[in-house]
Length: 349
Image (cartoon, rainbow, N blue to C red; front, side, top):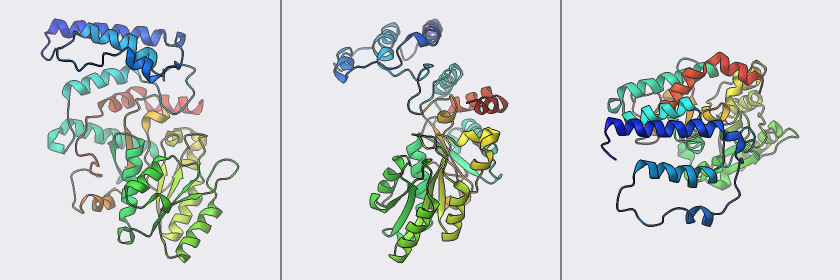
């Protein structure tokens, strides 16, 4: 199977494409979620370590009969839970092309054209968000990694005070923020949870009170995390007021835009979401694209160099991951969807 003939490749392609057509066409007739157990799933899979190859038709049969029925159907019209978005045919085909090239984006010379395509896609996102031309970004593997990278940059601004740093986020903030605090050595106990109001938004008065109390106690306030759409209620924190507090106390402001950043495409949301901070959006959580990448944007990209050793590098924000696959499907989906179509959809969703 590692060196198939042209006829074999065509046969595989026809079988997979036919499955995709049938799956998407009959999706609404499937249950959104199947109540099952780990034992039921594993009992249908051969536990023995394979020592011989399996033909493609048999592998596709296992996928069709043992994987798909036991999966949550994210593209189902009645899938309202969580933030995972459905896959798209154009994204699947783009994945095929990206996997065929199999580029690894360790450094520019390893994959010159894919790097430039990602830079282009990131710049499209920059333009959507209204950031200045100097803003930079990078694709990472998901939301938790993007928050980790952003908060690592925030920590670097006051690294000499590590051990006394304090971060601030509302009690509705995603759990990846507290995980990042632990992994970065800031400490879970040094993430201060700010109270929320009746609309689940951060209370600025409580933020100021906590910062003031920490200063008096000898701590070093470092970063405040705002939400451009929380994952449970979609609440948008008062970002402009939080920005004013961050400026007043000289804090790094990070905005988690995983769930709602691309609502900026809706005219009604422009005023609330435009901000002068760094914003890491997740394209696939705000519009129908795949859930395995996230774009972290930083309008102060050049200042983030110190996070990676203090040396100028060939990309605005160096990769936090030493090597990773090319996110080629993002380019195809962004290009195929068109901004006007996305804007129209956002205004009615």
